Image (cartoon, rainbow, N blue to C red; front, side, top):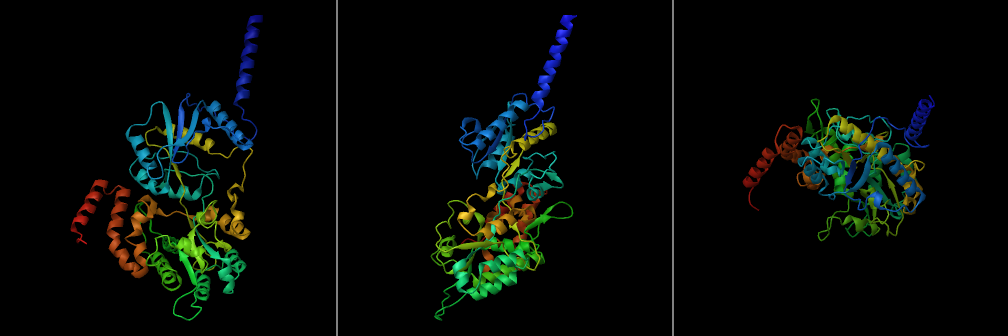
Length: 470
């Protein structure tokens, strides 16, 4: 009897220990029962991480806390987790294609983080698995979920807020000398009155031939015209491509909203824009704005807000607002360009769900270090508080983020550069769109599965043969 009681007590103690082990430390996510990777490795392949976390030494309390959390994940779910580089910016998608073609690795699992210009082909060609998972949590980026959904099925995800991209910088000294106050621009933005018309009025004031010699001395704006065309189109409710009522991707740049946006930006370009000099490089505008005779600068946030950015040595103080909207009360927008995490289409539905769970846990903020203001970094060192607190902070919010579906088909330069955007300054948008429509529709047909890639390539080859020699 004593022996039986002893065995019962031992069993009870073992159960108690197992129960205690199943409890997550304070601040950790609740343990999900039934998840066991059998000791396998899970690789999260990106295009930038040179050293796996297990091979690094923590240098701060936060780094140690992150290591502790990741170790707990491994112990709890019987898995070995890695994030490491496989390929680079230009080849990461091909790495995933090759991985799927080779059937993966029987001894491990993998997810891939892909740059946004390459995700479309992975969706269209069955390389990325449909993701059966609950994405209702706030951490999942809503704009990217919409972007990575086709016929209601999600094929890729991103976490957290998007990095704002397009914005409108301004030189405070140049504007002040023209009688335009930085705070007035910020106030217009805050009040929902930062409109196309308000901006053009400022550009008219700024663009001056100060010594009456027939040469413009102060220009209203310079920068990336591609960004300006895109912002004008999207803030006006237009797009380049979108899904129709049948779930097919179609060209939409022929809508009135898109064409009106192009014509607005074209007007700015022709009347107030410091254009590329005859001997200038394509990115002439980067040094031109810093030279101090241009009021506004159309570019992306990394050009000014990031550490060691190209504007870090600019002598004049600068501010930043969103691209203006057509009418008062419109929605300020930034076009997202986020890295996307995808699962190779070689696993069962159950395995995909399990992989998404462990990635969900892996991508959580380090417990105890959920710093909501961590995105600010050193941004206050480069500009004024309102540029950071009002403009950058606003453009991080999901309602101000919009996806450019041209990325389903390739990079914007590849799909729209020569055929549209780089020709708009001196041509009629409608004529360019009419000429480019067959090629754009063919690209959509490939994405939609209505044309094979081989047929598309043959079409391009035939057109090249028919093209007149230069």
